Structure formats: structure tokens, C-alpha cells
Image (cartoon, rainbow, N blue to C red; front, side, top):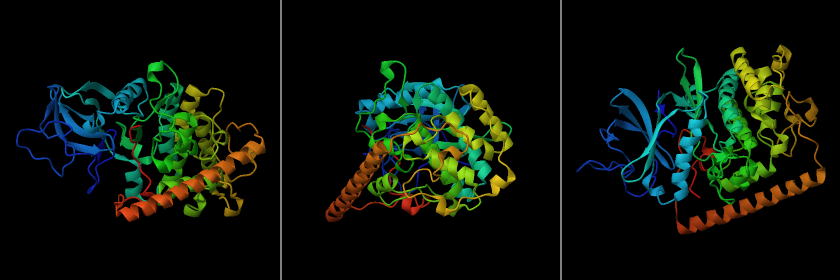
Length: 439
């Protein structure tokens, strides 16, 4: 089982994350392997953490496994890569992640044990070491996952997000690679939400206001809500609900609801096309569950579930008894006005949606929203503003495709190659980036 604590595992053949520099000074005469950032095994940090090995390397950070020499326990240490030290916002985001996670009491996030900086100035955080695999790897290894298992994984993540949202924190980068599957002491599966590095603070001290500029796009393209694609600064908790819906669609169906060969093409599809039919990928998915997922990934935020509590309440009829207990706990803590609905009947569990019931406008496929699974229905909206937004989406999509075509031609003429993505990922989904670039 892979160990991790906040960054995806390294991929063989992955491009170097920056210039030929070490994230921590190497010993005299020790060569750098493959010209990537590294910390030599045996290096002792702060006189108490001895580095054992590198766990993974992400867009902005390096994670190593280390031994606490005094306590004889193993931990994970995450470093900000030195190339980002010149970006004030990158260092601030790194420290904000530590502060954000430390505020959360749920056992569905990674515990932060310590925060400090190297003598050279690079910040680092010490975290609990996880033993397991992220949901992207789990789904790839296991193949088709049981629907009840998929719902349980997402509901556990919702428990963490419900607390985060209550504190005014929006994650903004939820995806299967940031949902880590480990085990409880009794062996039961446990989901941990990773990487709050691009989270947004909605409330609280003005010193903790989001660092994102209006035009900055942060997150992972396949899981971004339409409003996050336009501006990461203007999002609210409903963008996390969208990402969780995409995650649930993917781990049930085997691929996301939208796939494309480029980011502009992906934007155009999300803005102008309906999602792929989940029942085409998994015919046994109950009709009501399809409707719940489609509502969670509706194009307009007001057409989605407005809170995590509403989302899990809608999932409850299709959840296993243990998962329903988790949902009941979320409702008791965050939405006492919402009741736990009864389990779906055997007939409802066996009914599937026909493709003819889908619409061509994207978002939820059911025309009668009043007939949806439990959840607060958004207020009716005038059709004129909705039509204007639809035309805006079409225009933005057309511009995105045009820009993408121009960029492809430009790069082709410049003879710049694009390296293929991770072979384990679907080919159509490999192009849109999963990294968060500094503003």
C-alpha cells in the first residue's frame, strides 16, 4: 500500500518540477538523482526528524517520510519547493494550508503535528503518515467499485467538508487524487481529504482573506465548476459540491462526466453540453441516484444542492446502513432542520433512467425538479437571465475553442512537444492540468 500525506505519488518519467536545485541541501559529494528536487535519506531536520524516503512530489511541494528520533514514530513532512519561495503568495498559501487543517477537528483530514522553516527559509509542515491509496489509484486497481462503497467514500469526504464550510473554508481542489483511502484501527475504510493548499477563506480575520486574484484559476480542470473556471475568487461551498458530484460520477462510472483533449475543449463542453449519461456507463445505477448526481453537477450554482447537508440527505436513500449513520451525524451537527429520509425501496433501487429523459442543455436531466430526491429546491428564476447566461456560456466556449486551436497551431509551428500524461489515467482526461500554479 502506498504511503502519502498530501501530495500525489511520483510518476515514473514525470517532468522535473523546476531547475536543478535541491529542496534541502544534500550532503557533500552526494549526486542529485534525475535532476529533480530531493532530500537525501538520512538527512536530519530540526535535530529530530530523520528523512527515510521521498513519498511524492506535486506541483508546489515535496513530501518525505521521516522518523521522529525522540518518539520513534514515523511522520510525513511536506516542503514548499524552493523555486516558489520568490512567490510571496505561494509561501503564504503553504502556511495557510497548515493553519486551515489545524482548525478542523474531524478525523477525515490529515493531522498537522508541527510547522517550521529550514535555516534556508523554506517552510515545512509535519503531518501524520497515512498508509493506503488515493481514490484514483483505488478505483484503477479495483476496477468497478460497488455503488454503496462509492457513496460511502464521498459521504466521508462530505463530513470533512461540512465542518470546513461551517468555518468558512472552501477547498477548491477536490478530486479522487485528494481523497485518500486508509483504514481505521478496526480495519474499516477511512477517507481523508488532502491538500487544502488552494482553499479559500470566506469569513474571519481579514488577514486570512483568499490570496487569489480575480483572474487566477486554481484547481484541477476536470473537477472545476463552471464558476471556478471563470474565476477562482468568486466561488463558494457549492463549487465543492460540484467537485464531489464529479468525483462520485467518476468512481461509479469509471470516468468523469466531461472529458476532453485540452482545457479549452473541456470548458466548451462544460459550458454548452450535457454531461455523459451515467447509466450508459453503469446501467444498474438507480434512477434517483443519477438525478442526485446530476443535480450536484448542475451548471448553475443555484440549481445544485446548496449545502453539504442537502447533498448527503439526497444520497441517504441509496446509502448502506453504516453510511446512513454517518449522514445522520452530519445532519445532526450541521442541519438539524433536515430529516434522514428512509432507504429507497427495492423497486426504486432497480429502476434506471432512460437516455430519452435527458435534456440537451446540460446539468440536471429531469425537467420536473419538484420530483427530485429530497433537498432544498432553488427558487424559480426568470428565464431571460438564464437564457442570457446560456448565450454567454456558448460565447465563452466558442472563444475557448478558438484560443485552443490558435495555441495548438502556434505550438505546432514552434515545434514544442506536449508529453503524454500518466498512462494509468484515461487518455482523454490526461491533458487538462491537475496542478495549481502560483498567481
